Image (cartoon, rainbow, N blue to C red; front, top):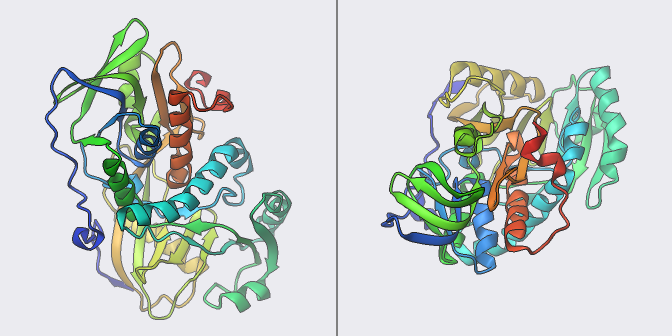
Length: 401
C-alpha cells in the first residue's frame, strides 16, 4: 500500500463558498448583551444556535478555533440510530435523541443546501454489519428483531454467500452480516460549513475567543467571561465537547468528560468502491462522494493528543483489510485524528446544570456526535424557549454522577 500521509485533508473554501477560518472578528466589550451565549462551536453548539435563531432568539457562539477543526469536522459522518452489534443498552438509552437527530439530518439535507449553496453530501444508503465468528453471528442475529421493529428501517440477517454476492470485495471469511436499509451518512466538514453559514444568515454572531468563566447572580448564570470581554446574557449553554471538564471549576461541579481519540484514513483504490457502509466491531468503511475509501477508527485514551499516529494508521488498516479484499495497491491519501467527548458512563450529559438557573450543558456524545448533535441542539433550544416540556432528561442529567 502506498503511503501519502497528510495530517489534515485539504478543503477548498472557495469551491464551498465558505472559509473555515472566517469566524467573525467582532468587537466585544463589557456591555455586550445577547439572549443566549453558547460556549463551543461544534455540531452541538451550532445546532443549538440554529434552532434558537429560528425562534428569533439572539445568540452569540464563542469558540477559539476555526470551523470544523475538531471532531465535528473530522468525523466519519455515519447516521444510524440503530448503532452496531453489542451496543444495545447504550443505544436504547439514547434512542429518542438519536431518532430526533436522524429526523433533523433529513431536514438539514433539504434546507441547508438551499439556504447556503453548500452540498452536505447527505445520502441514504444501506449498511452491512459483519460477523466473522459464530459468537459474533449469534449476537448479531439476536439483535435483528428489535432493530427491525424501528419504524423506517429494514433489517435482516444475510448468510455469507448473500453478502458476497452483494459486495464481492468483502472478505470470504465472514459468517454473515446484518443488512440495514434506511441509514445514511453525511460529510461532516461540509455540514459544519453549511450550519455555520445558515446560523450567520439568521443573525447568530460567532466570535473567535476563549471562554474563561461564568458570571452569576446567586445561582443564575448572567454572563460568560472571555478573553475579549464579558458577554452578558439571559442563558448560557456549555457545548464544549472534550474540553467540558474545564468548566467544572466554573460551576463548582465536576463534569466527568474526557477526550476519546479516534483516527480515520482515506484511501484511493481502483479496485474497491463500496456503495454501502461496511462495519465490524466498531470499525467501518465506505466510499464517499470524493471517490475515496474512508475507514476508521480507533478508541484511544491518550489525553488531548490529537495528532495522527502510525499506531492509529496501522490499527485502522488491520481492521480494514480484515473486512475488505483488494486493497494491496491502494494509496493512503489522508490520515486524520480528532477527540470525541466521552462521559464516565458513556452516555450524553444534557439539560440544566443542577443547582443553577439558566445554565445548560450538552456534551458527552462519544462517537455519535454527528448523529446526536442536532437532536441535542433542538432539545436544548426547546428547553430555553419553553417550546416543549415533554423531554425526560433525567437519564442524562449531570446529577447522576
